[in-house]
Image (cartoon, one colour):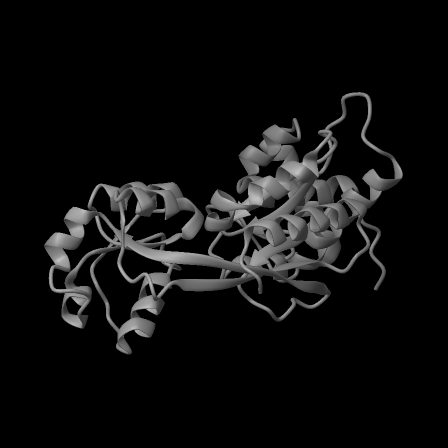
Amino acid sequence: MKLNLDYQQLAALVAVMREGSFEAAARTLHLTPSALSQRIKALEQRVGGVLVLRAKPCRITPLGEPLLRHAQQVALLEQALWPVRDGAVAPQLAVAVNADSLSTWFLAAAAAFVGDGSALLDLRVDDEGHTQEALRRGEVLAAVTARAEAVQGCHSSRLGRLRYRACASPAFVARHFANGLQARSLAQAPCLRFDAKDEMQHRWLQRLTRRSLQPPAHRLPSSTGFVQGCEAGLGWALHPEPLVAGLIASGRLVDLAPARPFDVQLYWQCTRLALPQLAQLTRAVLAEAKRQLLPA
């Protein structure tokens, strides 16, 4: 079946998924929420099914995933044909990236990509084990992920290894690990956890002790907050080495197991479609990863 797509309706779909709500999307498109809702309903009638789940935030349905991917690709292809001029706003290139990459090496790649200001990025933050799902759903066109197998229709390239160090404050170590890292003390000492998806501390404990330990955990969804929380004695946690190397050297943090770092292999996955801006971003990401990450 051939669909005659209305690209104003597709733009409404992209805006809703980018902003997370009909009200916010309407503001970005200078529409009333009612007018935007009518565009989405008309698109749903055209394809014969629900495209958006009205949740907080809104979620795309499996029927809507290929349309969302198509709309974002078309916007970038059109920009390649007719570069943005006369003060018009460039389309945003949506990318999923994990918080630790964002706080260590990825922003340098992003800065190299945007360069002359003719490109815009829409960065979506998620756990490195889950960023690939945003790519699969069509919400983004590229992702930094810990998964090697490429999403259908995408390329996968090795980036390198981001090394983590398990750290705590000297006072925390004296209080909880005075007799060293033992399974009993590790099971009782509070750790930090980024969010419900974060299993890194538990995976490191499994490797270290060969046991499935479940220590009490504070939830703290911030890479820099993790560091500050450990400095304050809130708990222990794994941190990207670039964020804590200086603090370890100065004695403000203690590396709990210098011989047992935790390396996460990262990959860059992006759609196979020949999009000039995406190719430019890919070159910047691969170059910066080569500079800052450990070899794959």
